[in-house]
Length: 148
View 1 (tube, rainbow, N blue to C red):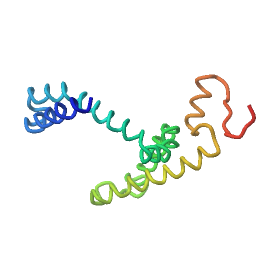
View 2 (cartoon, rainbow, N blue to C red):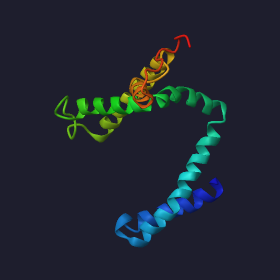
View 3 (cartoon, rainbow, N blue to C red):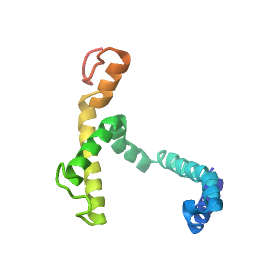
View 4 (cartoon, rainbow, N blue to C red):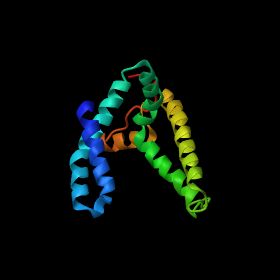
């Protein structure tokens, strides 16, 4: 897939970008038709990487955050509201883009560490646990060490 996806997908992205993006119907059409090939090539590359020793270490770091992705999404949204809007620090428009990137990376790093600590003790993230309970109409076991 990569041998086909990268050349066609990247060529389509170049046509899209050089044609003015969405303002050019031809560029837009080419971009829409070739983007799935590029996405598939990216996915194939990642899947192959995750089969290596280094890739497995990356997966081990990212997996806890992935298991509680809804909790992390909600937490990240709340943190960004508190950092960037007038409800909190009001940094939106007040800091340079590199600082925004640094803040985002810091938030994600904290979430990775918090997710690993949480998932070491619990079976679900807090929001996932509530969603599971609501969906199944019963309270699931939350602690990882609870007896079955």
